[in-house]
Image (tube, rainbow, N blue to C red; front, side, top):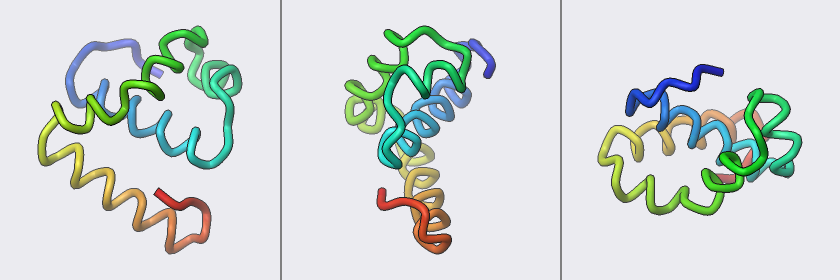
Amino acid sequence: MSKSKNAELVDARYLLVHFLWRRGFHAPVISALMNYSRRPVEKMISQFDLRRRQSGRMFETLLVRIASKLRSYGDCNA
């Protein structure tokens, strides 16, 4: 996954980590899947709510839409 600091890509990473973590994946597994070290993944998990508050409406909209799609597939509770 890209290591770009573009706001949209950072938001996408946070969302990916959030949904994987909610699904039961642990930080070391998520970091391996994303080709990141464990520490940035742990940071994304612990700072998700802060990122959610700071990112604005688009982040919240994407969070709700993805969670809805995942629920319709029976895969995740967001």
